[in-house]
Length: 140
Image (cartoon, rainbow, N blue to C red; front, side, top):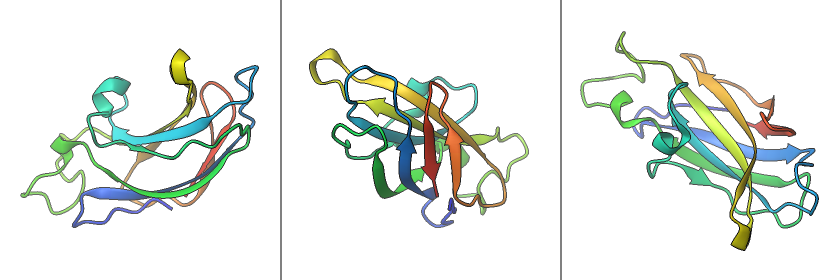
C-alpha cells in the first residue's frame, strides 16, 4: 500500500519481495533502491539523498525484504504554500521508482531490473510489477 502522509511530504512504501532473479550466472546478492522522481529524469538526478536502500539478501534468487520505508517527494513538489501533493497545475507527474540491484563487491553493483509506478491522487494497493530487465517485484 502506498500512502501519502501530508505532514511528512513522503510516501510510505513496503518493499516485500522479488522473484525470478536469474540475470546472473552466480547467485545474486540483491537489494532494492526506492526513490521518487519524474518520468524523464535520469536515475542519478532522482537519487539525491532521498533514496532508500534495503539490506542485501545473500545469495537469493527470490529475496524477501519486508522493508517499510518513507521516501520523500522531489523537493520542488513540496512547499509551504502547498496543502496537498502535486496541487499546482504545472507540477509534472511523479513516479515511484524501484531498482533491484545485485551487490557486486569489488566488481561493482549491477542493475537487475526496475519498476516504475506513476503516483496519482488515489493511493495504490499492493501490486506485483514486472521488472524491466527481468523478474518481478512486489510492493505494498
